[in-house]
Length: 105
Image (cartoon, one colour):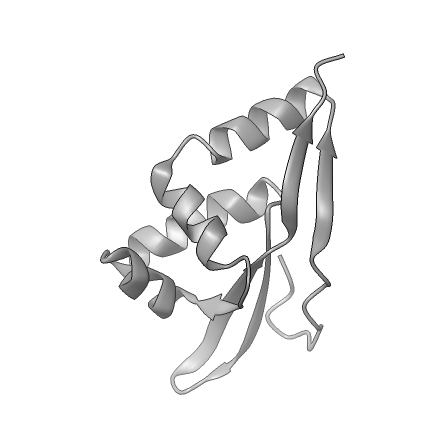
């Protein structure tokens, strides 16, 4: 996750994430085990959105959307950054990969 004070750009979308360590497989598996998180990944695949828009799309609260986004970001599936908003900083997120390959060998 980006530092709130940095002006970094969103990284380009990578085509494929290759996962082959047990730890990474479990982390990605846990992140993808929620229908809500899968919806968020698909929503953020083509455009960057803030937590408020994600919550509206899901029909839920900003707190829940924020918690789900945090799990996806910690798993390395989202790129998040902060930018000035109307009332302080707003967190923008975007999916980092289109495809995930899990190699069990």
